[in-house]
Amino acid sequence: MDPVSEQETPVRLSAWVHGQVQGVGFRWWTRSRALELGLTGFARNLPDGRVEVVAEGTRDHCARLLAALRSQTSPGRVDRVVERWAPAKGGLTGFTER
Image 1 (cartoon, rainbow, N blue to C red):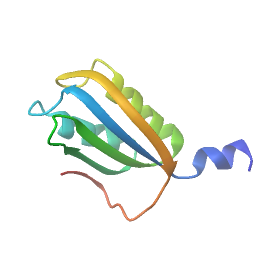
Image 2 (cartoon, rainbow, N blue to C red):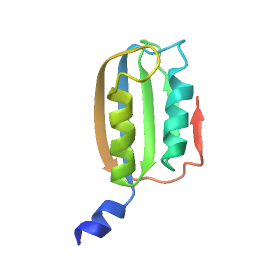
Image 3 (cartoon, helix red, strand yellow):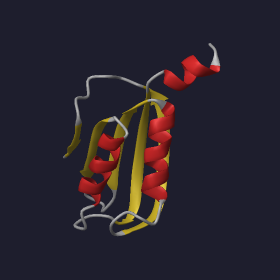
């Protein structure tokens, strides 16, 4: 596969954001960034205080969302982001807060 096609092949980014990220508008902020990048997926609070982010789109756009999650511009305080990359599964519409 040539590099251009590889960059345009949809991927799925799953990210678990650790820190003070619940109750501070973090999911809304993440949704706004994802929609700006044309990604589909969701952000949801987990019982242990983390936020799980699942996004599908081009690798470049998912990587830009990941960089935003790790930046100091998000609401709250991000201590660590654990990421996992996989092929896109599809079936996602829009980007929602769950």
